[in-house]
Every structure is written in C-alpha cells, then in structure tokens.
Amino acid sequence: MAGVDGSLASRLDHLFDKIRRPDGKPYSYEQVAEAIRSQQGVGVTHTYIWRLHKGKSDNPTIKVLIALATFFAVPVTYFLDPQTADDVDEVMDRVALLHDAGVARLAFRAAGLSTPSLETLATMADLARKIEGKAAHNGDEPAEETPEPS
Image (cartoon, rainbow, N blue to C red; front, side):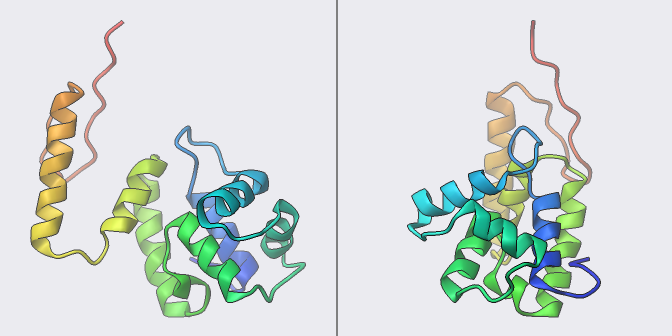
C-alpha cells in the first residue's frame, strides 16, 4: 500500500512508481517540478521534490501538497489520511494492471461520479474506440489492442 510507515516519502514513492508518463516511463523530478510550476503556478524545484521523495524534507506547505496531489491526480488527503491513502492505493494497484497512465488518470478523475455520468463516460470511450478502429468490449476486462495497420 502507501508504504509501511505511511510517511510522505513512502506515499510519494508509491505515486512515482504507479503513476507513469504516457510512454510508460516514470516521471523525473524535473518533469514533475516543471509541470507544477507551469500548470499550477506553484514555485517548486526538482531538488525539493527529490528531498520530499527521499525523506530529507518532510514538512511541505499545503500549497506544495495540493500541487503534488493535483499533478498525480489524487486527493490531497492521500498525504494526510491513512484510510484515504489505502483506498487510493488499492484503486491505483488495480489500475496499474492496465499499464496505461492515461487510463489511470481518467479513472481517478471519474471516481465519485454518479452512475449516469459514468455511463456517459463509458459511451464516450466506446465512441473513441470506434473512431480509432479499436475492437469494442464489454468492460468486464481490459480490451485487447487492435494492431495498427502497417
């Protein structure tokens, strides 16, 4: 789960391990810091993120916690509440089986939506699959990828 000790460092370690770039590679500290600065306007350095991740610093401002939570698409309470961390980690571990960071981010964003909203998202996903020429599936298991035409 979020780390045996529940520390900020272990929770960040879990996020860096499970939330990947679209190409499947882990995010670098530089990429995280740059995205937070440019997309959220929060002044944070890659060195500071490294220090938090390695446990060298452990008392970030709420602004930094919110920025990290936003970047990794988790609730800020992930860093503060053990139950939230466990719940999010359980979902994250299941989503990690999909090996697709884009799908994981979409799943986290959809968490808590009403049934009609989830049905709308499913319909949109089916439409996107059709547009891209991917095989339809029933949603009970990951869809098999349709090879790209050569």
